[in-house]
Structure formats: C-alpha cells, structure tokens
Length: 76
Image 1 (cartoon, rainbow, N blue to C red):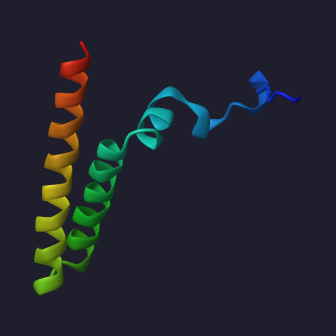
Image 2: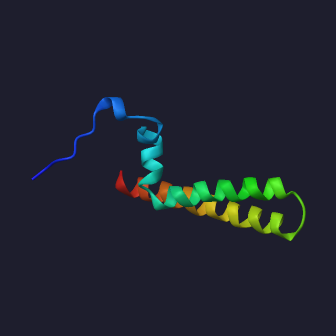
Image 3: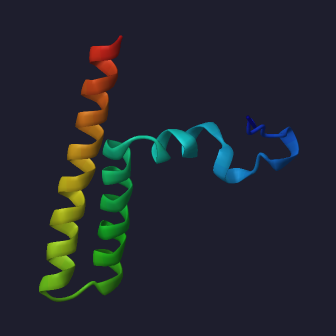
C-alpha cells in the first residue's frame, strides 16, 4: 500500500486555507460563480445579458453565503 504525502514546499496558493475551504464547499462555489457573473455583467454593461448576469449572480451570491452561513451555524 502506498500513502500520499504532501511536503511543505509544494504548498502554494491553491493549498491555502481559504481557497481549500471554497474548493470543498458547493455553496461557496455558488457564491464565487455569482461574483464572476456579476463582474461579467458589469463588463458587458449594456443590454439584457448584463442585467440577466447581474440578477443571476446576485442570486447565487445570496444563496451561497446564506446557505453556507446556515450550515456553519447548525454545525456549531
């Protein structure tokens, strides 16, 4: 049998605590995708797609953060 060991020199930005938490939580991934959609809507800046992306992104941010906060609260 073999075991996987991580050395401290391979720990980079992707292995930090905050990013690892986001990668392991579906609700926080929703929030990150929501932020990306809001930024895309801002960059488009005109038309229906800008508004759609802003609304969807805001909804994903709210669902992700409220859901994650609720799960965290229930585990305390």
